[in-house]
Image (cartoon, rainbow, N blue to C red; front, side, top):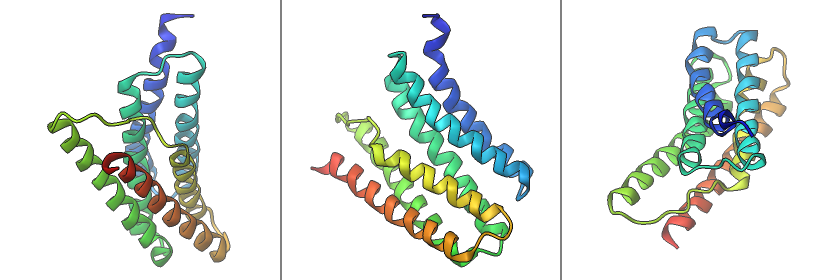
Length: 173
């Protein structure tokens, strides 16, 4: 195995972080849909590559969810502020941001106090990220039926709340 392979998963996470400002640059255009697809692929491939080639790292376990948080929050809030689907996604954006800010503050406090924390991702969090990226895509594609958008937004809220609960259980129980 090439020594280069051990850097691929973290490199893919960095690509996802870079997708956030690129997404903002393209706005609500077709190119943004391709950026969403790229972000989704990097999310899948970073974990897959790390497991397949056994190059998982503590840094990668922290970087991957941070990349998800940066990209998903950026995309969802940008779409919220620039499209007419505001009522459909406000709750998803608010709940996602509250969960992510809580997790980041919790992680900082845990590290500050020198406590141990299980940093492995919860599988359903990958499904949650996929739902958020899908919601963003539905909001950018013209003429998507409103019930589809609403169903995806509700699914996102439920998934975000559930993953927040699961992460909180890891920390406090």
